[in-house]
Figure 1 (cartoon, rainbow, N blue to C red):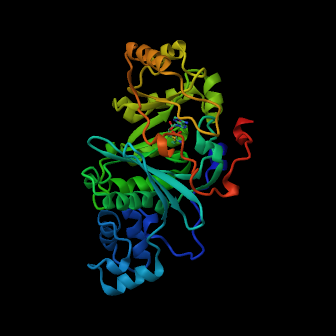
Figure 2: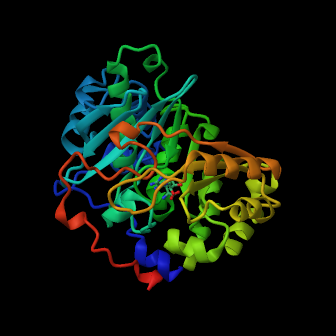
Figure 3: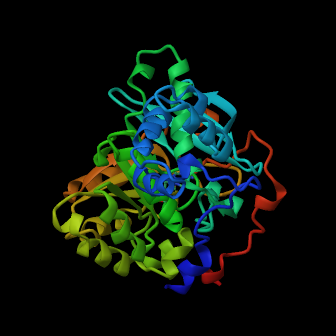
Length: 383
Ligand code: SAH
């Protein structure tokens, strides 16, 4: 295995001291196998998933179509709830940010973004992040641990509850889309992310079409094919630069997987050869990556990849001196890119007033554990 990935990849997050297995750590397929180990019929997994994910019921005692002895077994030998709600903030624009507490006192955030026809939930995969991108508030936190499947999928369960308690017409839609764009790098917690995706798309769990699920990555190249082999989810790639010199500074993992290698790997993916678009994210930062030359380099760079480019003016925060260009510069950049034939859009930041926008998830409003604050040292592969 690649030594970098091996060094970063703590395969799963820790289990709590009770040692009890967690119903939500498993896709339906894996729960079937697990139940059989306990001498139970595998089809019960489908019923249990229906309660946990379709009806939002965590308490085994309330799973009324299960036999009484199974309910007692689940209640005494299993865990069913991974996260507690620590706080909920609502933006003037309707965005909802929730902070959740894990069993070991860590905190993570999820953001629900209501739009005209959909409710998109942005979820976290790690406590902090090891990749230390220089403009990202989560990166400045440093890395604490991977989340378990139960802790990733419970963000969806808890946010669905929060939404259901809201009395708006939008809330009645429930969660229609899920994006892995919160705290952490999804592909460095691949097993848990894949189990979560299986639950999101399974007809007896959340039943989302794979196209309503998007995984965002800086480009952990050996992990792209295994991700897309599980389901044809949308792939978003954090590009942010048109030269290695600049990308090395913004996204330290670029020193390990430079631009040419990243783009070549994408060109070889089956989804790409089948003309499914890759969503490229490009955070515009004043004086760093916002020049007309950068804008002109984008189309040739992405040639051969069906691309949708998302420009995101940088959301400022206390941990970085960098900030967004002014409107005229953004507009010039957008016009050059559009003129070069690329499909490009400007992402309007949502939830800025509650620090819920891209790259702002750093738990400013809940006490941070001292241990999870970065020392500021560059990551190992970047030295
Ligand atoms: N680790 C993954 C997913 C999390 S970040 C990834 O990097 O893709 C989701 C997106 O927000 C990424 O494109 C990231 O680069 C971007 N982002 C991070 N900090 C930002 C900031 N301060 N302003 C705007 N976008 C930011």
